[in-house]
Image 1 (cartoon, helix red, strand yellow):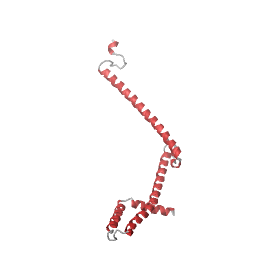
Image 2 (tube, rainbow, N blue to C red):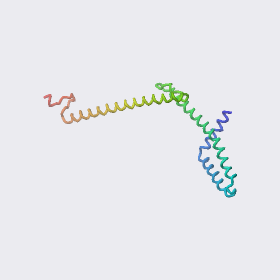
Image 3 (cartoon, rainbow, N blue to C red):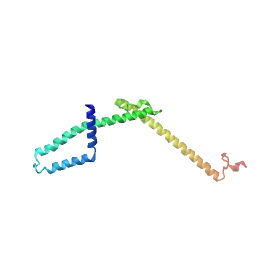
Length: 160
């Protein structure tokens, strides 16, 4: 039964997501609206579209949910495999979808702290790099001006 539902839901989900399904739906509504005058816009005429759309929506909810569950599970399995295959990755992050909401919040906070540390370290490295570039610029400028041609930090005029 499950395999049958899987096959049917996959086919219907794929078909309902195409442009042709949208065009068909628009055509049905246009035809329904066009026959309104023939039926004098009766209650039965209105009931046909209301009932049809309600039943289709009700059934599509289950098909869409089934498709979403399957897609989500396959993505989680693929990510778990990527984590498992990486040498430096932590296996603690596999099967996160089975964790409680509180555990996920704690992990999120942990990553926020780790991210801020990394950001701080990057900023510190950038500042050091800029300071070194500034020192190098000053050194090169002083060499060009003949102040310290040999680069020992002592003015050449002071050595004479």
